[in-house]
Length: 93
Length: 145
Image (tube, rainbow over all chains, first blue to last red):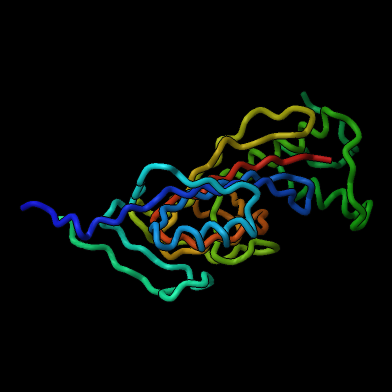
């Protein structure tokens, strides 16, 4: 059965990097990679830039390992109308 | 290369806790400074040998283990570190990639002695709430002073 494209979410890959000096003098290089809906992207990136040293957004859609049908959570700390909402995974068949 | 140790001092690469306890009885809580690069490398090798696995936490790691992330597909799991060679008391892991489920918040990390081993070390990380299934790559560099 053909899949309904109206359910497709064109997420963007967001890569965030920082280097942190730990209390004992060691260092941790951190890289978080998340996949964010376009309608959440600007707020998500603005929030990430308050903590991370570098934030990059992919030019092309990329749903990541969860796929286009994967669950999406809207971080509750974001200034978005649906902050805290969890959109469950949709059926892929 | 082994450095000479004081009489009665356990070798740090055999029993790091006993080595540290031996020196604490002599120096109290004062910070120990390893004076030779050989000793620093021996100590960093001992840390590397003990700190074999890592976890990410939804809470800030510090003096005790935090709450480990769970769930997701591919699922979150503790990951074994791939440490490089020590040089002058400095040793680094390769990039250790953890799977993070949608909705999880990463806030800290811990280092432990095995996949279900004892907690050794940890600390805060740059906090991030994940919108979708993603990854968090951690590269640790341990420096023995």
